[in-house]
Image (cartoon, rainbow, N blue to C red; front, side, top):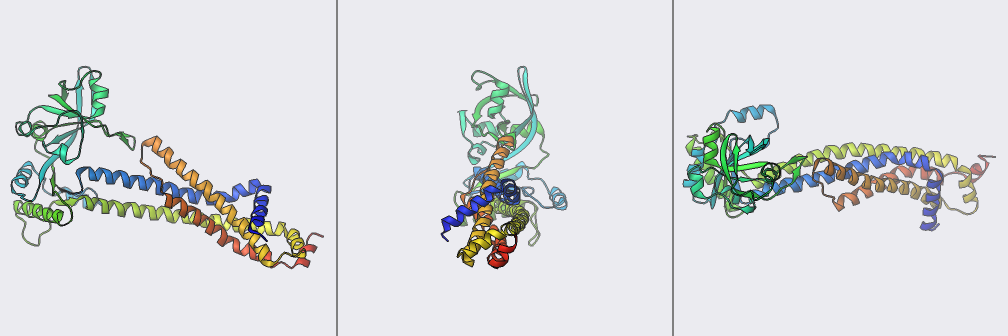
Length: 408
């Protein structure tokens, strides 16, 4: 039998039992759609977080009180017991880190921004040294950044995000306008580049002021994050990390062999941790999807067995007319493979559609990976063929005489 003829017969059989075919495909559709959706969202999350990590540059080393991620509540409580990273630590690193190309520090709080009759209550107030805009690769759409003199003298100037311009400052040139940040007056000197939304939350609702002015207004209690640009990669980053660790250990009088009471991290550290978390999450979802695919395969096998029973006389007639065992085997294998491939195709489109709907609903990033589509289709087809072997074999082994007499 020609492959095209077997495919035509398989499609005719599936079309003749449309409702049964649709119900049979549900398990396969759900399994493939789950895999595609999770891979699409995971790739989007990886791309987004990697981009945000790299906003500080691949050569930037971070000194902080505690790591950005932790596993248990006990770890968090232990990290909270550490001493804060202070402004004096920043000044020490600035003076003593000879390998650092540039050093900056930041601290943030949530505050209220007021201009005339308009205000916000959930704005992120960033205390930045004058080097931070460059270290964070933040583009200034209009105006300028801080100067070193403004940073040293706690000048009341501010850089604002797009949301502040659109929702608070209103029409006209925002530069030169005086806003109140938690009651303190600041003159707007720059507007940052618009960043959009993430998980439904705006990334442009912020105000940046000189760190010294921030400390005067919000107090010295609280830990800073210090950023040092190594100016290179690989060994250079390692050398800067070691120098920063020596400076911080010396300031805290830590004895040799005593664990660090601070964290020194690079962008590679965050990326590796992110990859582990997302890969573990993907593995769990893939296992759940695999169960769904197996159930879908079992359903296909069950329906194919029913189909063999219903078409026993047809099989007997075809064998009587000269059909060989491999022709019958091929016909039913193609039928199960076609059914599972159709389920895989529907699952691919459904998974991508759901991922994009999530992106539209909560601005969660999604990136469609071609390899995930190909793997999804291959696995779906393979599952259908695997679970279709037994029904196909059973059909091929039918005795033509017995088959012809079955409905007499």
